[in-house]
Image (cartoon, rainbow, N blue to C red; front, side, top):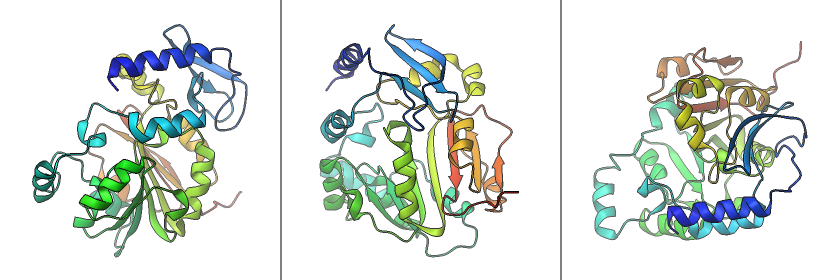
Length: 294
């Protein structure tokens, strides 16, 4: 499906759903602030209770299930387009040189930890799993798209589940890269994550930064980032609310991240970097640990 066709289909869906009741997809509140409007019929709303920024109208679950099987495409071709055998062999030989290496961040967040067990949620066809394994991390994955999951299993020999119930438990890290902004039910996602983590395990999510500081820095990119593919636009405030009862480290960056800042986090406190204007938001938390109320 071409980009133009995707956009037209998106606008048509939004037009049909323009009378949809407004409610926060995280907490259910009906109290909002209007952040932005696009195409007359789509709005970015910020929940006054939990602070989640989300697009209205919303897509239904049945549409999303079908869409991410075959139709989902992004401009960075490797993320969704599966290479031929010759191209793949070269990429494997070079260890996917154009892709980011997340292993230093993961190891910085778990200083001194060996035998790290990780699940990559929304892993596409497994390129990050492959790279992490080369760095000694016992990584497996989950991918909603059955064709991409099968391609990774067959061509990279990595473990990718295409059903949530098949994701193994007992992980040290529940990792996702630019996934959470796509999800219709963040609350269910976090609860599921907790069930697949060790008691001291880390939730680690990278996503676009919807904070007002980034909007002030780059209004254009901020505006085009939310919409059809990104119905949620997480910011620092929502990340703080999401893990309000747990230890967390919340950072923004244009890449690379400050490994010393990550490594110095004690894993017990709630820390937010003073710089909230980076393009990307990184949320690290321990969702199975509760901070005692004072």
